[in-house]
Length: 172
Ligand SMILES: [Zn+2]
Image (cartoon, rainbow, N blue to C red; front, side, top):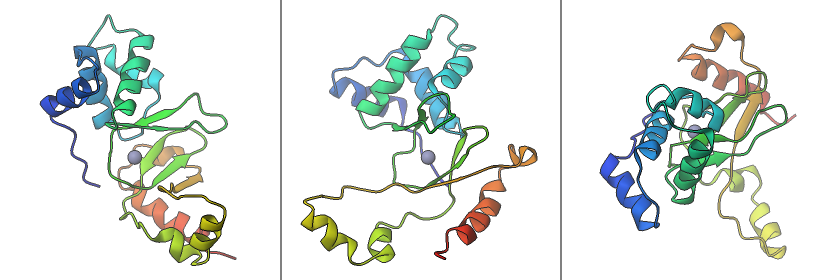
């Protein structure tokens, strides 16, 4: 799935427009996040970035990630039971995920995002939500399951799992 990380100057301008400083630590955190495919936790980002920026602290990484989320440069994926914390995503376009409940890792699904999926799921939902006074601003789709340990590093594992998960998603 194509993903274009932000140019450092665009990142700097975005942070500064929000009144936030674009520090080397924040740039390093963003660079790692933009390259990582598994949507790392703050601690994972910390462990990776520490090798390039030895004096960085976990608190600084947390603050950098929150600055990226606050400015819309990155998204925070809430933790699920058993995971060690929220995960972070540098992709800005709407997309779907699949999450391994054993390792907690989250990957992008290699398929296009369908903005009309909820209406397709049930055409009555829009009227129901409108009656409840609920305004829909978006939706998330995350497939949950277990990735075989042997497949953890397989890049094409995503496509295989899509087919498997898709079969399981059929209404019974
Ligand atoms: Zn993602």
